[in-house]
Length: 120
Image 1 (cartoon, rainbow, N blue to C red):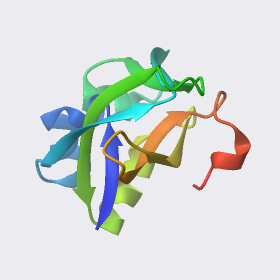
Image 2 (image 1 turned 180 degrees about the vertical axis):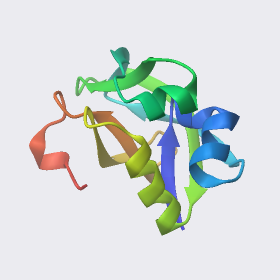
Image 3 (image 1 turned 135 degrees about the vertical axis):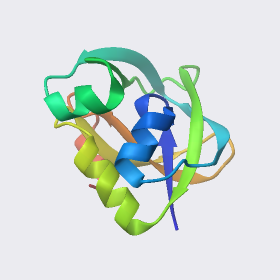
């Protein structure tokens, strides 16, 4: 199983049903070194699925006191690929380390992410 951290629309039940065909269950965790911002989405399918054209996005700061709370979901590898298709080009998927000490994939702002951390 893959682990994916969600802090935004992937926590919405209608997005999970449309993207994965099921409601996900997960556990709360906290990502450090990032802050929440907003982005305007232009993809009509993503807007239709989420019901909004404004989505949250994480921006890298590197400051350990900057934290973002969310939920870590367990997904199959094929569901992770479906999540990749849902996210628009402004996001990049990286492997993050969380307050719990565990690792999980997370979608962050491609423009602020240091290139050395990009895994996807």
